Length: 319
Image (tube, rainbow, N blue to C red):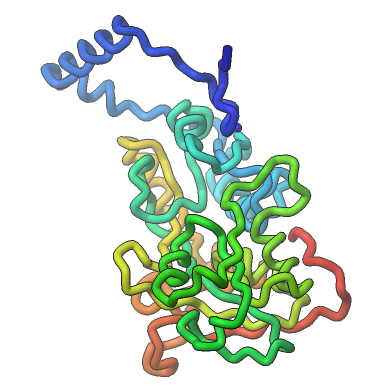
């Protein structure tokens, strides 16, 4: 969200005294010296009477406070399998998100966490995501990558600070870039992804570059072409990611329990994601749709996908 809270996260600002720091140092020394203390440090704080999930209240198609996101549906599935009530702690995915959620022990799992995030203990992945570019078929554009010479004449919408910015720089497209701010303003009517895809539909930009799930979701009814992006040559320019659930560091028993749920319910998870118009990609090997062999496609990225026009002009509804 004199100041008493962080304006971005709403989290209270903690004043740290010398005595508090000394207490931490003393506790650390005791933990290092005592096996029992080490065991106590590793005690899990999971509330097993409920299934507590932290999520963004306005980030469709991932999560939404009304429960319409696909991550909401997966959380409902897991709560049902565990036989526990589903309880949410809502917090925008802004800087400090993990501190005011998992680390404050107000929930026990965060969904939609890219593998490798150091702030959490990652579970096994349950889906794979790529960044994509989208354009209207009526534009006549046939580009398969941002390296296409046609891009030099187009307005390209890109979310600032996201991995596709590497490709923008790599292909000399900074003058063509139309940046969108990464964080949603709570007062906005539309999310960043929804606004970008609306601008594409309205002709304010020629190409939208964003994460695959919202691109496919908001492209419904637009008669759009969606093309997954290849990795950039520069370090850090990876365009596809394994997506996990995050639990608190050290809570390995809870992580294993979630892993077992993912494994046992992967087919149903895939069906939920597909029901939102989002292709489910292989978790290993080239990021191609499940059931598509690399030999058949001959490519390291998913084939371009057409999103047909809807029978009416209404914006896609939350599912």
